[in-house]
Image 1 (cartoon, helix red, strand yellow):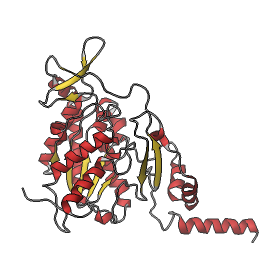
Image 2 (tube, helix red, strand yellow):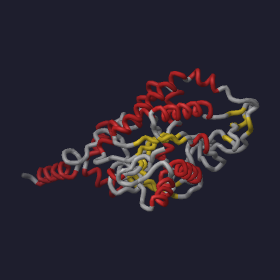
Image 3 (tube, rainbow, N blue to C red):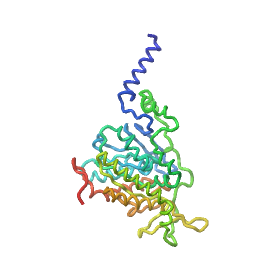
Length: 358
């Protein structure tokens, strides 16, 4: 055998033995961000300096012993993933720290959020991604829901519902190679990967701060509900499916609502918006998101999940968001603390317990 032939044979053997083609966990063409550690500069976003973003070999954020020992698996879109919030400062980290103090041991709250993913994509996580994580069996699955489903409702529903942010669409063959090649894994370890969109500053005008004023009269949510009736029904159906899939995984579902950053709700529960040039008051995402939150809590009670209506109790201020949707570390801390207060008396973490009786 020639030297080149021997080199090729050794390369093939190396790929087959150390790659995921035969013996490893084959992720096919799934675009799950796995085994990465990035540093992002948040200057121009919220002036947080350099932050570290990590996902392990299973694509998860957070500290845990093994997948079967995860206490809470958090799912959702970009407000769960928190790509621009560094390790230790995400709301999942804040929740984990609070529960650990209560339990007297480490409580593994693990982040499986996917940026831009609606409930349609979250459901497919249970079909395409989570089965590839050996032994995954969390005690609870916490779904932090609402904002990304607005995209499904306000854009082309069929197209948006089909978009799960999991499958490679532009180059499936290249993604298949990246997922399985031992040589690519070595290259990535040595030279890293492009930092992606999270390293880029937000375009000017994204931050939503300033003067928020009361509305002259209550919003007509009934009119919005009429426009989005079919979309809200479809969302409710996805929640029911998600609840079923969580329980099939052996976990109890927790549904939590959320607020956006382009309106305010004061201590009395009154809605505040921003004055516009034509004399109107812009309340941003409030109307449709409120309807989504109401539907979330209705279905949550229907399927007997654990219901946390953060939108009812949590109040944000300027500086809590770095754009209309995503929270700064200060805002994330508020979310984490609020979730802890809502859950601390409802969960326990012995080997056998799931839910405390009401």
